[in-house]
Image (cartoon, rainbow, N blue to C red; front, side):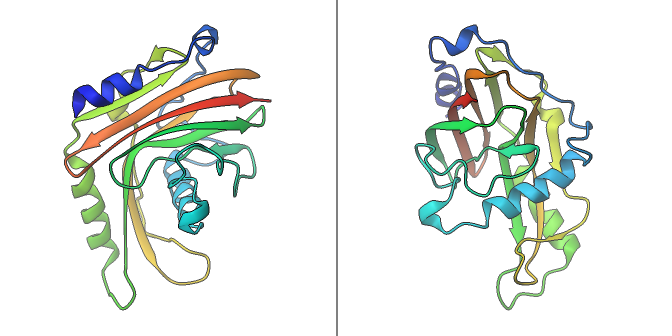
Length: 205
């Protein structure tokens, strides 16, 4: 599995490799005035706001990548479960990209009464044993990705229309605005219970 993930992450298209890689922001850096830990909550609310048929997370080719996007940050999606996804997306210029290399969320099911502490412990346990992380932008490979772990310090409401309490934990990347043109991102990760490998071809316009 580790070999498969690394091979997938090195599948960079010709042409995009000539583009300069955008800076990977430090995990403690704010994005648009908020911490990256706060952006993980926004990301999960965005990811969980869609029916499966139009979900950017379930999307295999990128046709739904623009749904629900607003403001200075543009979310890219992971996948549900262990999957490989190859997507194409048009992104407005000037957007900071924010996305998970691999992540989990734990939340209360209907009728459950779990404490916030229990939810946070479960999310941490699911992401503790890390096997691999990959991030490659226009052929440039980034190291030190384990430092980009973000855990929600408090539980949050996952949906706007009910009181579902959630806690998140995982490894995220914030990439400074890309220059106009075509770019290729490969990213993913491996945990004991899940792996994901995602390629985006991004046309920044």
